[in-house]
Image (tube, rainbow, N blue to C red; front, top):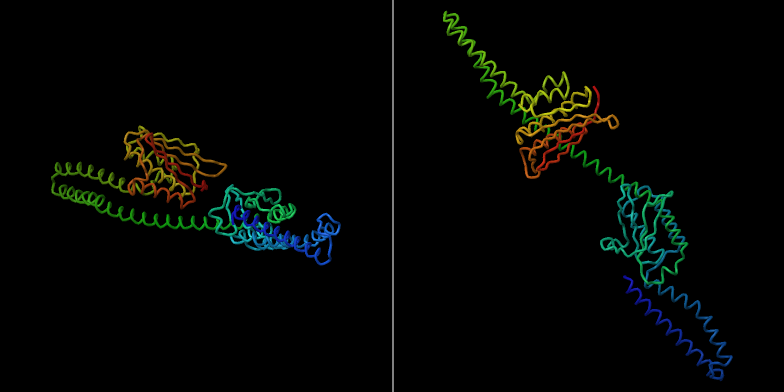
Length: 426
């Protein structure tokens, strides 16, 4: 019921009460005059005494009728002690959620006779959550309310919000009762905030666990795909080259045995070229595996070797401020492959761009930060369902499996890939 409806109903009720009291007074005094043969003068002592008697008799009746009118307009109210006791019972509950906070709003509304009320809970991140009674009022809760701050041990934990209207109910309720309800609600809001934030954290942890499981499945699928691709490359690339070397060796042996040394020497020269091509093919095929230099010298040396193989060493700068820090092998492999993916993407999609690879160790947070920046034209990651975006997803999955994070910022002025992983030492 809104404020205008309450004002109209209350005005009609009190108008009827006034008319009833006036009619009773006139009817009573007139009949008493007729019954006892008294003077009909309104200023005569008997009439004055009768008026006072009527006023005295109607005072408790008026109070009772006004209470009835309040009940009709604002609903049945709780006694002050009952309202406080119910709030105390809520505070001792083992678990408090949305229903408990709506119950608190109902207790406040029925205790103060406001018809509706709301509880706004303040969470640790500064946000607020509203719970109103009746529940249907939550969606359209008006900002025109009276806000009563609720504290717990000196800290504001929320507010009680009461509708602002012209009704007499709030004026009839003592300020002491309202303050007592506010004071009693402190422990309820505090405990509810703890329960709700715990529920949020459990939900967030569940989502995080689901994301990690999904990323691990993607990594397994990617590794299986890489294994099949490696097998195909070995079969189609390295194997024919090695077969050619074996056949060339057989040919050289045959020519030597037949005494055809000049032809055998020419075949040996061709064999050396074939062996170099086969070795180059193997290096190209095995580039996706952990390079030996990573295990021996660390991430920075492995990245420098990669830039040399890709032919981008001349415009690539590697800044290593970890001072030779060595991490667990799985962490170093994660950082290296993420950097390698970013460097290869830049070399492929922004040829000629200046590249900078930075490695930093934060002793306060015990994290290793790696950053690959280029000054190429950039790209829109959202517009790529595969290709570059799939590589970025692989990097993010790799970082997530070791408890790290990865982000990318790309614009027409360049692209920066930044990742952080725990810096757990060997």
